[in-house]
Length: 140
Image (cartoon, rainbow, N blue to C red; front, side, top):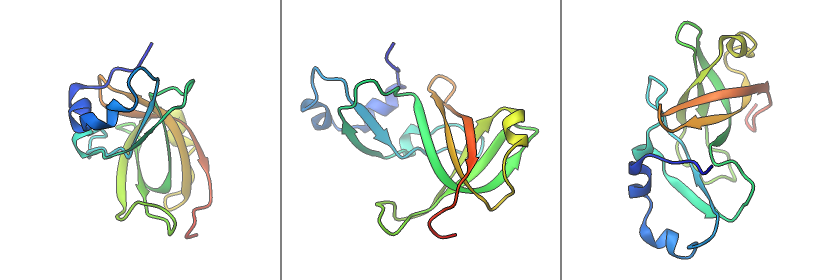
């Protein structure tokens, strides 16, 4: 079953971007942004591009950054995504993500580099972490 994004996502992508992909299955890549409550903001999530990648689940996300906050009571964590020298990102930004208490309890200490995998839930606009692991970052 294809993922159904909220209408505002489709309004942000220019029509010409779809023309060359008509009749094909494509993967749209976004640089997601969330607000302080951990709700995904399609208006502030720039589209990075499109690619033909059949078999990829479109509701999945991956992130690598520095763990800067954990709120066990609210079931949220905050990770800072920072630009690397070879990347296209110009300014750092923070993502507030949701996770189960068991996952939050197993997170490394604040300030550590983390790799996160999870899923976007478009109806609730939540990005939910399913896997977290300690990783070195380029500037460690």
